[in-house]
Image (cartoon, rainbow, N blue to C red; front, side):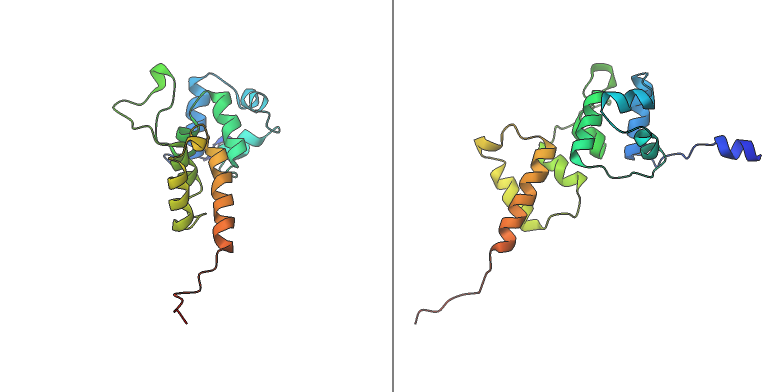
Length: 160
């Protein structure tokens, strides 16, 4: 391959990667990288770094802004699962809609221990949690984790 061809060759994102999902939606929306940066209020070159694989994980806020600008669901953009949201762009076949809590857990895989996740899933059944989005769930999970880390179990106490 010539030196010029090597310079022009773009890295191919891994199948199912965040970069691939963004590239697919940029093409479907006929949007430029610069257009997405403007719509999502990102710094210049940010989308390029994502597409090159230099930014593989994004904060929930950045993910939300990109999802909104591309008019896709947060869950689909973050994990590749769920509905894309948008008539002809929806994947073929049935796609179960996951709870936004599950999208936050999937995006931040390994960040919270099982007791924190279990407590969040219990909280998800309450009316107060009905309208939370994945970025807010990440904050809730952090708060639950902080609270649980303060609880000290000393074992069984015997009556004296």
